[in-house]
Amino acid sequence: MLFVGMFLLTVAVVVPLALVPRLKVVPLDLDITTVAVSEPAGLTPDDALPARVFDRCSVNEPKLRVFDAHLTQQRRTVAIDPSDQDQVTLQSAQTVIIDRIQEGDEVVALDVREQDSKRPCGDGLLASSVDIVSLDRRTSTPNDKLYQLHTVSLPTGVRAMDSADTFVEAPRDGFQYHFGFDIKPGGTYPYYDVNSRSDQPARFVGETTINGLDALEFVSEVPEVDQTQLDTPSGFPALGSSIEMPARWWGIAAPGVDPEEKVLMHRYGKAIRRVWIEPQTGTVLYGSEVQHQYFKSPGWEDPSLAQPIRDFRVDALNTTMAWTDSTVEQQTSRAGEYIDQLRIGNVIVPWTAGIAGAALAGVGAVLTFRGARRRS
Image (cartoon, rainbow, N blue to C red; front, side, top):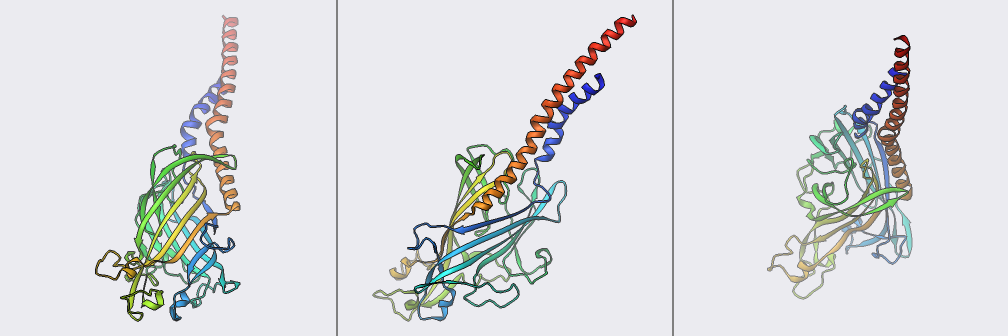
């Protein structure tokens, strides 16, 4: 009894000191799918079509067009090789789909072509990318060993890691798909924005409860970025990041501006992203973001340019995306399982083993002492 008691007391000390730290790592079997949809934000008269999207087909028409639409964003993040006890490499594939648009008086659903097929201007796929980054498993921060952003479509059956001409290097320092462990209220954390390819501060704004779990809310504001300045695999500005068309096509009609004058516009983007983090495990419980992309003149600060052109703005993408209820339920369930594992290691096992060990060791010591007295 004395031996078993001492063993249990040792377990009570060793488990929280040695085992629990092994649980506080990004799992090697991580596999998360999140879905977000466009939400009403006062941009359109119909809440069923809450986003504004530039019509790519209108470049072949007499005038630019922007339509009301409903969008769905899906992201799947999985752990891939190279991963080991110290690092985990995450691959996150994301698509943004235009589900339906307002076409005159009708709502029209858009089709999405097969991956390897040629996509017409009216295809429902709005954007896609594959992001690959290696993290330190204990801190959840990038370890500077692998960081690729694939912006060119991959042929079916080809792994992103095996394609050398579809990605740009995207180094970063901030959190992204998983926050650190034991996050504290207050303060600011670096957060990586894949659209601008930059680390931005995520500041703490408050605490709340989501499905019974404590959650810390952080806000990250991404400043305006000229998308023609972003690196691409080809070395040239991304398709659609700049358009040069006559002033009449843009809808610029003002004194001193020739309707046939070619006007160059660049695509700019900015965002406000909100994430709600379970503080013990760093699990993202809920996320939403305001994405605003728009065309404006790169010479908007040039006083020699006609004022109507300098002041011109038109939406390329304007939407508020928020995670679906099923995604939030999935994430809170996942975080709850992590919390239970930590509670078992930090509380249940140490207290149970400690109390039982102390009792057995005490009884064993008493019996040993009595036996020694009888023998003497």
